[in-house]
Length: 395
Image (cartoon, rainbow, N blue to C red; front, top):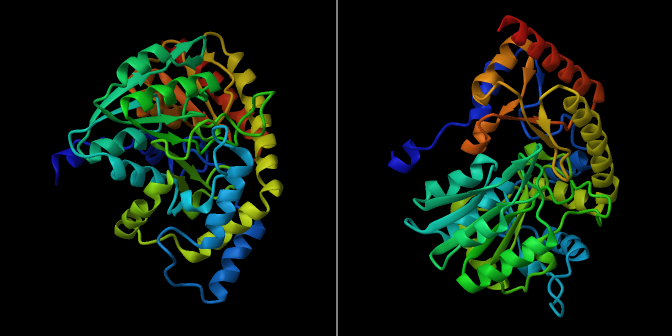
């Protein structure tokens, strides 16, 4: 095996989950997915596709109808820089999941030895992908303040130089809920234009946005970019459409890059399955029946969980603007991996360790609050409270 592969760390989230999987007494909040099943009309679209015999390859870049639908949905939300042409299907590549979209983007621009900058804490796949390709990874850490994580913009811009091939940024952010402002996006885009740096924006959580003045989605680089900018934006059907297991996503690309991504898709997965794409098409066509309801429920989940966590003395947590996670720090528990394992074993509570997302988050824990039953969240907080009380007494 290549040394870069041997050096990859195994998922610490999986390490915790493996310790509790199969136990019916564990309240599991470790993975980033809702426990609500995909809506029936989306499932039926896939069933009808299979029953009609659509079991063959599709175009590398995806079904034309789905590319058109994605482009129309994105254009309705993101106008681009003033004077830009509307976002069209020629800029869309359908992928086998959001993680596949991200890996394709990294493969497209990063050579071994290239410098990549990533904003952390972040979902570990985003920092692993450039390492797999032999890149040199530099990270710029968000900074926690009273439970909220914020960006030191000057530090990020200073880290991006003409040597930087790619900037990876995920906002709304997994795990912190941090979201880029329009001003920060403009500064980053202008700076990367000067340095010639590509931007890979993971915006899969853009619809899961709770700011009072929001236009139903978080600020996107697509709101301000020119079509020819060195910008790739990754999306997924997983979160907004309750389709995590379907493995369907897409990339928004400069028009000149689409054909090359199509070649990469051929040598990675060939194409996304047709029946999955049919399900995605129906999900987009009936998105007003799914996504707004999902967002309303997630906001109720957030507004149930976060105040309950804030009531625990010494616990640091802020209400996230976007995403589906509460990220918090427990007093006196600096090793999040050990803490998460103890919570599974001693409290029947499954959380993700902050160490999985970055060293600077080693004392933090991530709680996915996408739960059908708000009572599970309340019950989970009580288990945490009781565990802390017992640990304090035992200590």
